[in-house]
Image (cartoon, rainbow, N blue to C red; front, top):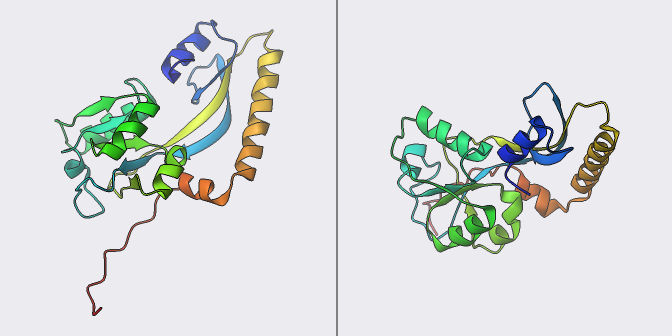
Length: 194
């Protein structure tokens, strides 16, 4: 088990017969079968005093931004977004998912993670989705394998994994599917008579 860039390197070097990773793998000698897609979200503790939503990316960069390790797609996408927005001095922490989920409720910073993985924490009010003026890409998981004459088993495993992923998505309870969708904009509180 490793991060997707290491798995990708193992596939290209033919050290691995199959890998389940963030893909697709952009290599002509590797085939990627789509499994599932999850949107990334901006996530924070409700206690974190963020500006009014939607928050500008430049404002958000005043807090530590926590996401997956360097060289992963979420980290690279975040760095690219910050560069395009002209934000040079953002603090981007590179962490494993379990550490991000433990640190975010403490109000340490804002996380870039898929809401589907933290649906319970969101429903319990420990975490909240934050509307930001910058859209994050989806995470696309694939079963990928090298194109070799003797890869029939890898092909069968990838096809089975795709069937299982489709069935799991079909059977997912509504709250889990809802958490996987991009968050809706929150309306500001009304200032009318009480």
